[in-house]
Length: 180
Image 1 (cartoon, rainbow, N blue to C red):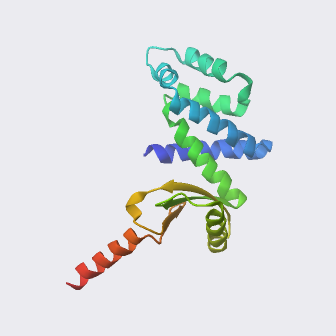
Image 2: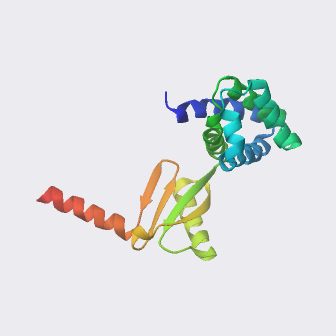
Image 3: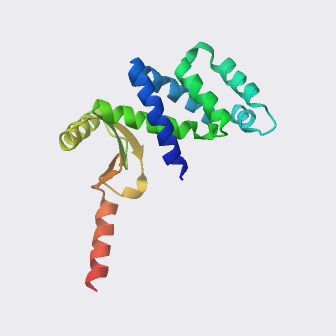
């Protein structure tokens, strides 16, 4: 089973508990904080993944590092991940949790690839256009990709909308190959 599938199971269970407690957004923020620190702090991650460190010591270190910043729900999940040797899934669990929370609340994150940074006006136009298409409230994350030549490429979930010059050239090339 792939790591993302496993992470999604943990995320679904955590989301169900958070929804029941009415703290979905709070848990989302806490998870993002924990995942960010876990990804960025190499020494922290090394200690937490070292097989010679006892699970209780790993959990104590985690709890001391975050203190009151994380709720009992997140700590319980972290403890379970440590016990099962799956703490490395924390960033993937966070990503899956945010996706689930966004899906349930009618929001979606759009990764918009462009050659140059989008202006605020461009972002609002993209948000409005794709909100109509998807029926969700869209927030734009602009990523610079000079290989596009021009235009934009938009990824929302598992859907890709390609309006880039590079994408059009690739389509043309594929069409010419088929006709040859």
